[in-house]
Length: 212
Ligand code: PRP
View 1 (cartoon, rainbow, N blue to C red):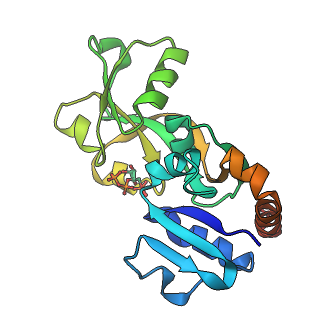
View 2 (view 1 turned 120 degrees about the vertical axis):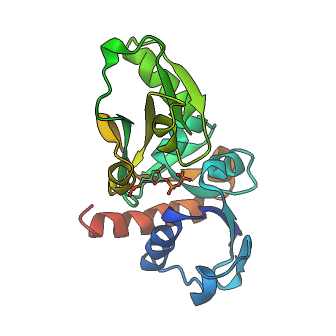
């Protein structure tokens, strides 16, 4: 049985992704979630997990240092990496939205600036909408931008809506629903097809069994 390296996103998605793998029958150690280790070997399953920043998961998989990975659709659309997206895991559901101050009016916006941690995705979106905007790339706390006048609007993930609410911002346009995906390196899919097919099959059963 060939060894499988799985790139996992640290942070919000991590617990749900681990829960899904456990439900699919993968025997992951109890201390997995609490550990600060970035590489966790699970010899019982002949698996190695690498714990990466969510935005970097497709990079590890594209370069083949991980065979498979879990990545949000938002990250996939931003990164456009050469990987296969094989399964919608239907976890960590949230959505992408354009948001701004409640009194924002597009028609009065002469020099539209949009802050986002998804510059490519945001650029494509506004191009499709036929609107010319300047995109300002930030790495987090995007909601700060309209509050201090760095940008008029933001493109960001909305999960509970709490961050927008507590900062007095409103949703202006809903862009798309986002869930996590299982992604695969194309060469690994050829070389380790049995292991990867088995993983997809087992995860698919859990995903469908959950009525998702
Ligand atoms: C994400 C996102 C929003 C927030 C949305 O940020 O960018 O800021 O969560 O969640 P909510 O609708 O439940 O409030 P994250 O906490 O990942 O950190 P970041 O701001 O550093 O990107």
